[in-house]
Length: 515
Image 1 (cartoon, one colour):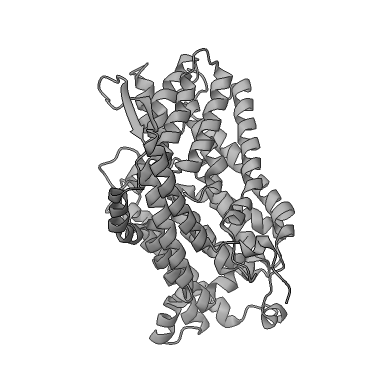
Image 2 (tube, helix red, strand yellow):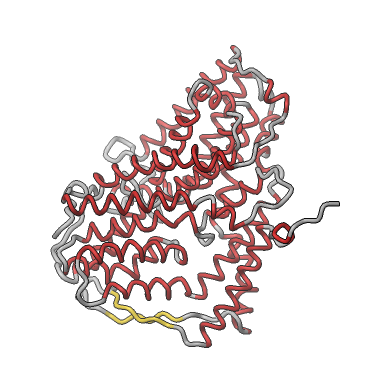
């Protein structure tokens, strides 16, 4: 029998790797707390006087009796409330109906049969980048769908999973449309700006121009890297022989199913679109009218779409799959439908275990405050005397990128950074909008490189699901897949910022680079 080399023997399953990270975080938190690691930074929390206050963040030890009590008493609740868990299970119900009824295979094959491989990849990447307007939901929708799209195209599903995750992570910080996250960040940006100029205002289209260019450039870059760097290095994916030999042709039943499903889906979409348009008779019922900006009315914390959007998408998928199945005769009775509803949930036991350990790791790391301490310490670099405009730009970009590795949440980071970054930019005659743009660009670079990102677990779980190798997928290998994308995004976005600064283009409508 051939002996396994040392590397193979020490390769850890993702679950075991997460367990090691949990233990390591607990031990490190105890050590840092023992050393008294803490950071003070200036923050602006008073929106009346806009005076600076000294905020103190220290590392909390979990390597103690109270820490162990916290872990044991919160682990179950953290798992149950972990958003990717419920979102994934509910979305998979809808995807299962579309997949088992044959709707997905028919549509995907019809659209991609004669399309070039790189064009399919580009379309997928662009959709992922643009879908950031829906917040985090695309992570649980696009990653499973991307795997199926490439599977139906007889290509390695890893290509779809890896490229879609790269695009979703990059798109989280570069969005053509104003997202609810951008709106929340603007509140902190204004707090920082009002410390120096209480009349300063921000427009909702202030970032549009530079974001459009960024999305286009990043879409081409991710597509190029996927087709020329990632795909050639992936192992050959083995498909069932009958699937490879099958020649796809649309039958009359399938065509009838597509027409019926398209009509039913269109009616469903029109109903909900009407319900989110303000100012029309009986319209706007699904908006949060307590908010000012339309994007906040649509996706605020208390809005219908924020709390129910996952179910809205799931029902859309169910309707498409159900009506296709009725038309194509692949769903003949209620038993067929019920079997289809659970199809995508078959064999996700290990996925649930991975989500359990990931939720525990993320919760434990957050409770130690290590991420906040690192972010605050890095932010204080912008208080160094004598920094000019260009060095300040570079520092904010790098600080944002590094901080994202330890504190992925945009709002949490900017709440710490804005009170220092925005006034520092204004003091060198750079606009608050430019500061927020650089912050968002920096986030996009490293969001795909941190296992602390909430939806990283979906990416990890699907790589594990489609892994045909006898060896388990290594957690660090999943992150290595993302390194070429991060390098390319960093070069593109930093270069774009420098060109924009030198030429002096407006960031968007009413969004200048300088004050």
